[in-house]
Length: 318
Image (cartoon, rainbow, N blue to C red; front, side, top):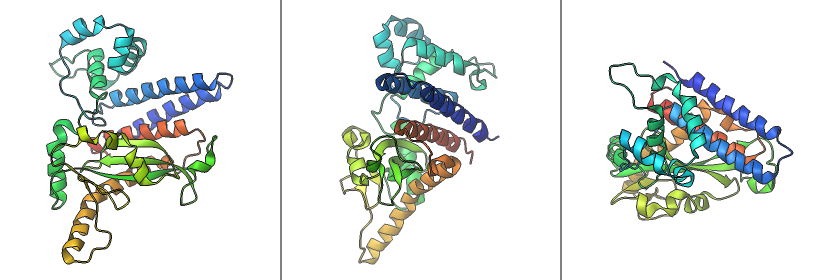
């Protein structure tokens, strides 16, 4: 069974809806528009993740209580501020989202065992995706094995690289800073994938004119690598990234057979990130050239596509 058509429809409905909202709200202040857009973006992203049962996108934090008692006895004791801090949304948005996704077939019990309430499942999910304490959590060993099966490298937790989301029209503000070296308007998208080409971390916000190394050094991953990298973890990347104790790059000018062999093996592992970018853009061809002038809309749409891509890949829907 293919989910892609339904998912693309859901993506475009939300995208069109959010676009219409901002086109019809010209009389509002810029600050209020931006704040509303942030909340709308969070809601749509969470709706997609919950609806698609795609908890792979963010690293897990496994010390979260998953019992009915936590939902019924502990969470209700939090005030509005505490609830929003835990759930990343206020209680009204939470109830709206739970009601909206609750009718989906994924939440309907089909066997003898009854599912937990939709609200409880949603609350647990929101707590899981709110933490980046570990880049892989308990999936780390599976990723090690997955990469080692590709070639000869061990302890690889991911491959990192960047791509450009091309803008077919100039952005509304400061368009010149989005002009990249290939003479196109764009924003940069840095991604980290596992051995299956599933995105486990990403940055979508940097100007097309910015160098890959700067994007990397200002990314969440780099700013927090001391807590994300464990033991002898290694990350693969191309020559554009700076050398470090956990980043493996190819030799720029190999002079020995051993160095050449190393580069070939490195390329076999790193091809997963290039394939992932290619599959993402082929699956959602709008990312090859967006006719959107508002950068925040470009960022939101790209993120929705990543969520859907991860879902389709984990369900082997090519």
